[in-house]
Amino acid sequence: MPAIVNVKTSARTEMVDITSMVQIEVARSGVTDGICVVFVPHTTAAVTINEGADPDVCRDIIAKLDQMVPPHEGYRHSEGNSDSHIKASLVGSSVSVLVEGGRLVLGTWQKIFFCEFDGPRSRKVFVKA
Ligand code: ZN
Image (tube, rainbow, N blue to C red; front, top):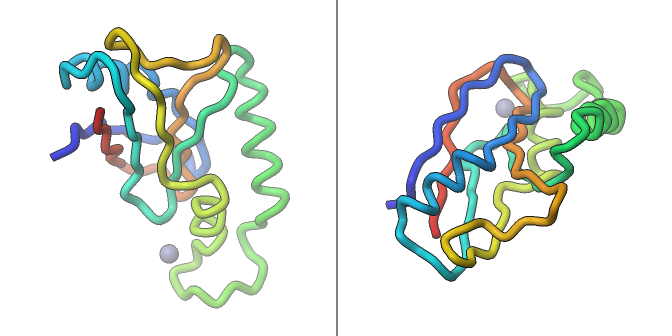
């Protein structure tokens, strides 16, 4: 079984930095050199890697996604959250990160972000190193 990171989101659309929680699970796994897969088992949430230094980067990503995929556009899906499903597919459900010396190998400015597109909700992220 993969390790599970629980994420509680507080807005309909939100990017949550989960890097430290993923790092904890990598350390717990005992893997020192390999690959860590971070997988989101939800259809209206996603995961991505991007800049964590300036929070405006995430704000810009969210604003642009909202502009590209408006909430109400005559979608067919009866649940009324088609924009959430589309954004989740655009961003993707997994990322892979190299592990060396028991540490995630990320660029200087990179963080791993859980992307909520239909919150607020309690979510799970699978982590396997
Ligand atoms: Zn739906």
